[in-house]
Image 1 (cartoon, rainbow, N blue to C red):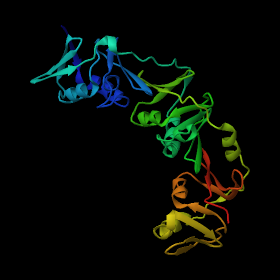
Image 2 (image 1 turned 30 degrees about the vertical axis):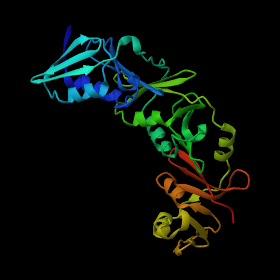
Image 3 (image 1 turned 135 degrees about the horizontal axis):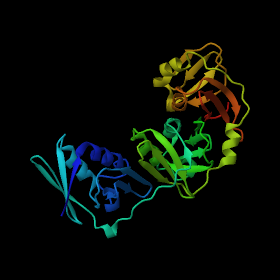
Image 4 (image 1 turned 180 degrees about the vertical axis):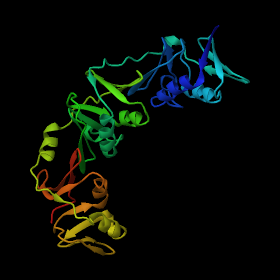
Length: 330
């Protein structure tokens, strides 16, 4: 039996990092992690992660149970004893726990892509801005993923499209699942590196840890995307009380739709209006869609031509642009 002394807080942080990838309940490869060569790794069908550890251990423990055990150890020095391939024992003061492990022969070890570019947390910020548009349950690739497109990221829900610039020179036309953004949002370490292959990308953090994601196999409709985002538009300042008016009439709007008339917006159904100076007549939009651009838009064009004969609103903001489809033309 191999007995190791360790500091509970450093190992706990490593395993907490891996919990962005592991599950409490799932297939064995989703619930267990790999400890070897001063590295802890984990993987599921889409994601993989690795974090340096001080301990030299060779085991495949259940991550949730090991985290639970370490959380009970406080600031005590703890002893980790490898009983056999199937069990680890954790002892700290009067506390003792046995952690179930997988047979090493049943566990594959994930490998990250080599880092080929320097990145920073602007990558994460852009990802978090566009991600709310993405649905993990969608069947079409452009609705279920985020497009890494060189210096920018793009996402759409079919009615709204966001393009947010991070300014880092990365490869274009890479579609990552929303699961990657969700996992990255749980990690507090600063980003420092980026690597990729035909089927995956990997981001690296300041302490040597990494997160890898599988890529979507289908390609985004780039030509259609460019036709929408590159439309010429006549940008104007957003009316200062536009969102005050939307908030006022929202409870009265049938199906959440707002109609623009000269100098006012209208909620049909029970009926409500809100006067706004210089509001252009004609556009009809989902209130929910307009609310989604509230924190990003600085200038707007209510009358940009959309695909086919559809109406469309274009907007620009700080390091972001996008479009909102109209409900229908008048």
